Amino acid sequence: MTEAAFVDAVRRAGACVFRVGGCVRDQFRGVPAKDVDYVLTGMTEETLCAIFPGAEKIGKSFPVYHVRVDGVRREVAFARRERKTGAGYRGFAVAFDPSVTIAEDLYRRDTTMNAMALELPAEKLFDPYGGRDDLAAGVIRAVSEHFMEDPVRALRAARQAAAFGFTVEEGTLSYMRACADELRAEPTERLMGELRRALMTPRPSAFFRVLRAADLLAVTFPEIAALEGQTQPTDFHPEGDALAHTFAMVDAVARETEDIKTRFAALVHDLGKGLTPRELLPHHYGHECTGLDALAAWNARMALPRDWRKAAAFVIREHMRAPRLTRPGKIADLLLGIGASGLSIAQFNVIIQADHGSLPDYLTRGADYLAAMRTVTGRSAPPELSGEEIGAWLRTERIRILRRHRETQSVKKFLLER
Image (tube, rainbow, N blue to C red; front, side, top):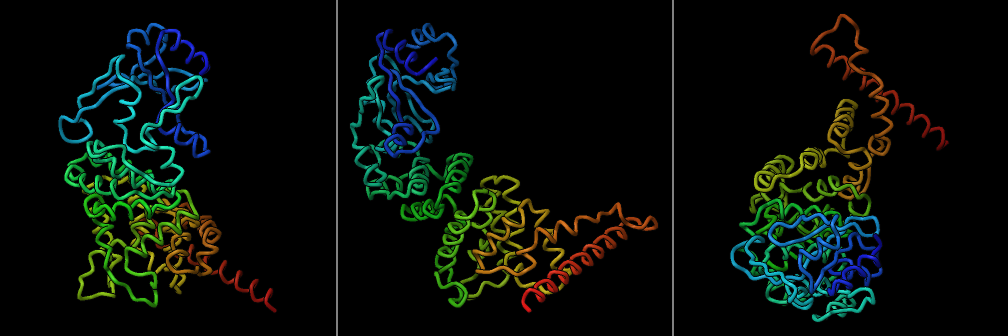
């Protein structure tokens, strides 16, 4: 069924149909919409099911259906009103009936740019709260004080600022501040969902900057908030304290890779600096170890994906020594460790380059060296060896291969420079 046929069926039943939310916002931004959602007014559930017998009900607290339109399952909801009755995102009483207007439905939404609707088929714009003007101005503005009724809207506003490069106006920041107490009680998977989306934005630091401006960074991500004011030696980090360095790092890495675990590893590489006693500043001795403690605390509070934890732990442990090794055995162990961390050599290098500004030969050519070392396995060991002897033999052989390849590379470089 085409959208035109869907709209025609709804209108012939005496109802109205609107495109709503993100797809309208993205249309005015001039970017393709990820999803197209519809809202119906003037229609009952019974009528919807009668004219679209293949509609699949997915909503629990209020009726939402999937209807196949233009070959895609699209969300179709009834216009509704909401009234706060308890804590969190489930603490709402919802009313939906044919008398609810599109303006009432839009009023319950979070920000003005998400509170626009296009009535179909003519695409007549309904924008009662000035969303199009705010969109043009690059401003995120709450529709009303109802913004505070779902505390995770505060994280969503921060994430949209990072996604679109927008600013959050002061009144909305005030609403965000008022969400602090409820945010502490929110299911951590909701916060995790917003973190995941924020890390995939072009400038992830903006997400954390907005949360800090709303006094919510310590509430939601205390390990990151602890980096503020943790001074560093200016010879190595002229950008400022550990928080400023972390923000610069995650943005630099985001410019180079879309891999989310690499971006997360960059975000937390200096997490241990938040635990450095003030009397030791600006030095952060042993932050490679305390960083693992901070990562474990974060995971205990908000379960992190296993691949994120694995990659992040490796980067926390190794980021200081990684570009400074001289012994072939330690270089071999590092390269093999990268291979086991879940990161590619290229992904690890993006982090080290952003942190240190340069890369040694063994990282620049690390993928080639690692591939060469992996040509020998434990199955190649002499038959008289067993147990730990095989492991020792394998490490020795891989170091020998690494040394030979590096010497060959040095000879090639010398000949080219003659």
